[in-house]
Length: 376
Image 1 (spheres, rainbow, N blue to C red):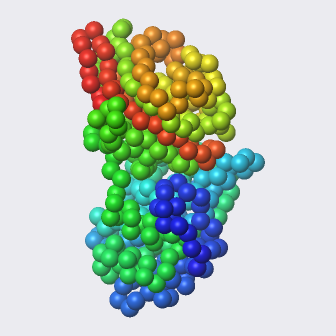
Image 2: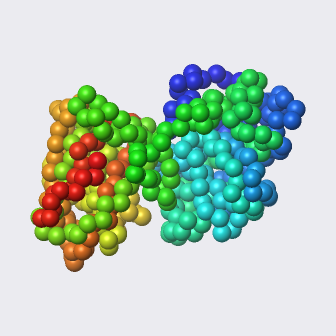
Image 3: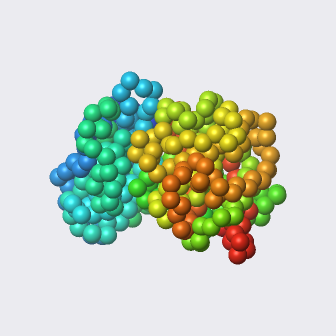
């Protein structure tokens, strides 16, 4: 089997595993597994263009201990955009079960219900409901191609102990070691925040402490995507301002972010009761004040971007920003003004150019006519 440094194997968002290598190495490893370790195992293969949901033929019982491993990639035809199976492949137990995936190319779980296991190919689709109904037309899948594979292993005992025994026999492109690491040293979302359900969980954000700020949120995204949300309900009235401090260490794009193929960025956003959001980002070279609707088709109707900083001169430095959100909404979104703010988002998108973005956030608050509302 091909060896891979553990540090690299454990990094979420690494390059997709080749399906041919995955199948060969997995078969060899499972053949060497100790007796009594694995109840059963299955390998499912599908094309990226197959729209959700694929019936695996596997019946899951409540309480089953399961680990999945994924391999392959999805390519947006005619472009350099590639999406790894770790982001692409979702599961569902039963036709009305909740769609879910892991944060890496491996995921272990205890089934909370009984039913048939289904697999769904996600991009370029988007979920409309938690059970995986599509918000996008089936024709969207004609724009992608690629080979995907998922191994489904049902254990006799606890996954982490079983994985350790299996690792003693070898590994598959570092996936076994990475899953042990994920189970024993999970990266928890910052306290009071959660990931946007229809994009999926990630290991991008965590609570941290810096020399300048005792309470901050650190962000590191490598070929990954995550939208972190915190509910902050308050009236949206003239004079409402958003303040925050951030230290941008690495921008995920070397070019302007206002095109679909280069739309990689880190930002802080405000969501309103009407479903619109304003997202403030640090651009590579767009002039400060540039505003545009999101170039991702499924987000163009709800998201507006505003560049609040530009360039690389202040990378690595803590800087503070303030935006009059009410004025920005009137200028860049327009139409009837919503009556309430509902959430603050932190957004990291580095999938399109498969790069890395790193920053920290601190001192997030709203200034309103009624006073200050602390977010972080």
